[in-house]
Structures are given as C-alpha cells and as structure tokens.
Image (tube, rainbow, N blue to C red; front, side, top):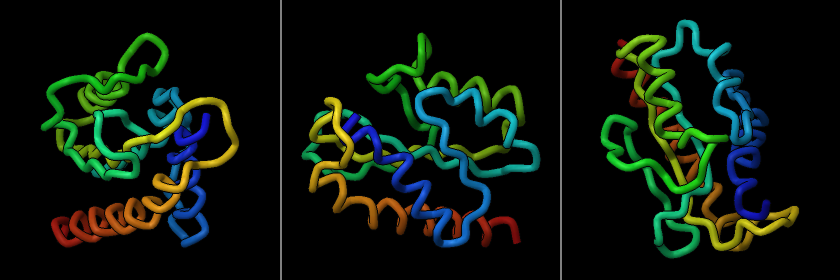
Length: 138
C-alpha cells in the first residue's frame, strides 16, 4: 500500500547488509513472537501517521509511547500488541519504534519520493540503536 511498504523495504535492505535477525511481518506482529527468545532489543519499522511532513522520522522507545498509533494490527493497535509481547517475554526487552510519516498509503507498488529518501536515515538510526545496545551489553 504505497508508503506502507517502508517496513519490508528497510527489512530487505538490512538483510542485504548481513543482518540475520530481521523479521518481515506486515501488519500481524504476532509472527514476531516465535523469534523473540534470547532477544533483548526489538526495533519495529513502519509508516506511521502522526501529522508530520512526509518523510519525517519518528524514533520512540515503546515505554515512552502514550497513545496508540492510528493504524491497526487487526483489532489491536501495534503499540498495544508490542506492550503485550513485552510483558509475555520479559520486561528487560527494549522496544523501539522507528517510523516515517507517509505521504500516501493508497494502493501502489512503490514508496513516494519523501519516504524513499528516508530509508537511508531509518537504516542509520537502526544501526545506531544496535550499536548502542551492543555497548550497553558489554
């Protein structure tokens, strides 16, 4: 759905760069549950509408997100699904949401130019979060 293809685009770029713990799950976050053993950091990438300029980047720790994002994962907002997953697994799992303001989520097979331009910035932010996590672990 147009800019909603951000998550899969970023995931495939990360896989090309050699990251092996990448899950492409679409709107159903429950598929991530089977991959979370021995994981202490989860980064969710998605197009998120928060009323900003298209292509703008949002990075938030799940614990700091007060309101559910507007798009739904079936009947449950993605932020609520992530909070439930975190409680099921362990409280020590850090969860970040890296979102980009979409320009268009209508049917289409490509990202709009502002969102396409943000892909590199999203990947850089993910690599920064991974490096920070690695340093914190020791």
